[in-house]
Length: 284
Image 1 (cartoon, helix red, strand yellow):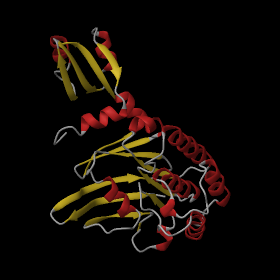
Image 2 (spheres, rainbow, N blue to C red; image 1 turned 60 degrees about the vertical axis):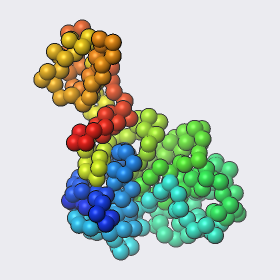
Image 3 (tube, rainbow, N blue to C red; image 1 turned 120 degrees about the vertical axis):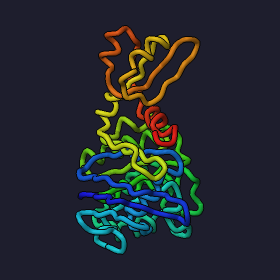
């Protein structure tokens, strides 16, 4: 499926949540949607899923708008960090309702995952712990087999072992049946190796869209004396710099081999750090 975002704008009163955002996602990949709180990530995902309407611009999925379009909404599964299901429903009923809504629903996977997470299918949603409610969301997202599956901080309350289990299962299911997976998280270091493409939103605008491997290889940290580094970065694209006790580190795009040849120390920049640096200042 092809997702085409055209000048997407969303206002809440005088506040701009999204400001003329445009980009295209057109093949099965695991996309990392990153940004600080208030960057517009959740607003974008809710418009994509047809849950709210844009103020202007649109999102076209295979050329059609998803709002009030049952064929498309059945193809999109959005799992948010909470309040995904009616509190009075039992886990069993949540899975049953989901099976009616998603045409590609995998009943066996849903029940296998319920056992994997020790989820009591007779329990009501309101009786679940935060972690178990997150596990239920993860199960529905994975078992939906929706061609566009969106996870927005889906694992609140899950411990590290349960989160790792989720990542492993997600990759296993994705390899079996590729689909567009959009993953928004603040635990970037845990999941960044899964990303095939990264999008960063800042203040409602698209700050960056890049292939993850290219992004990992494109940015580097260059360290040396202040004089050495300042001389080296004169004509370079600099993200940010840090100085301490006569030494300096500059985060730049490219030029790692050139820096090494001049005797400077170099290392790669994790995607989480890169996101922080890119969104640290207004207009970055």
